[in-house]
Amino acid sequence: MTAPSPKILEELQRYRRLHAETTDPLAVRLLQDIIAELEASLSPAREEADKKPEGG
Image (cartoon, rainbow, N blue to C red; front, top):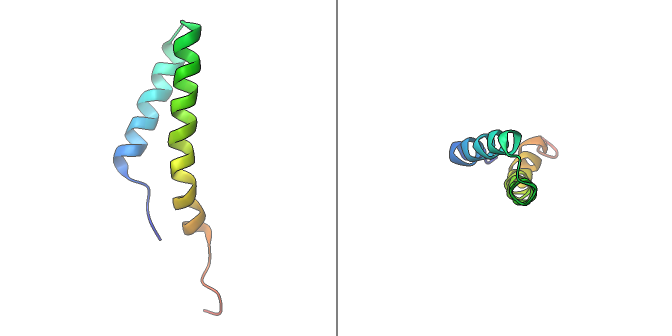
């Protein structure tokens, strides 16, 4: 099992805060893309953590 990197989690929270505070539509869209990519990078780690060993 691989735990998500604390740095990635910190970055994700930082970008979410920026997204909430931003009023520029272009910046909002770019931040949405960044957040989506960071969340996607966490998905494989979460999927591995959710898997249970077979036959064990």
